[in-house]
Length: 164
Image (cartoon, rainbow, N blue to C red; front, side, top):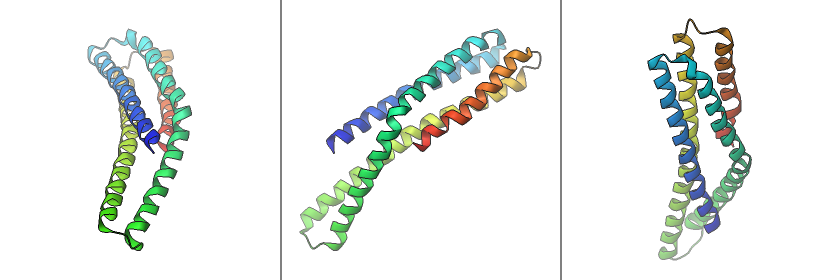
C-alpha cells in the first residue's frame, strides 16, 4: 500500500513535469503566432515531437501501473466499505476505516486529475496549431502539411494517454 502511494507521488510529479514542458511549448507557440515569425515553426515542431515522444515513452510503464493501481484501490475501498456498513465492529475501527477510504479516494482523484491535466494542455496545443494554420495564409504548403500531420498525430497518439 505504501509503495503504491509513493508511486502515485512519483506519477504526480512526472505529470507536473510534463505539463510544465507542454505549457512552455504552448507559450512558445503563442509567441510565434503573435510575432508572426513563421520561420521558427519548424524548430518548434521538432521540440514538440520530442516532448510527446517522451510522454509516450513514460506512458508505456505508467498505463500498466494505473490499471493495477485502480484495480487494487477500488478493491480495497469496496472491502473497507463493506466492513464499515455490514460488519459489527467498534466505532474506533469504523472511524479508522472511514479515514482509510477517504485517503484512498483522494489519492485516486489526484492520479486522475494529474493525468487529465496533461491531456488538457495537449488539447490547448491542438487549438494553437489550428490558430497557426488559420493565421498563416502565405506559408509554404510543406510547412502547413507538417503542422496538420502533427495535429492528427497528437489527437490519435496522445488522447490514449488519459485512458490508460
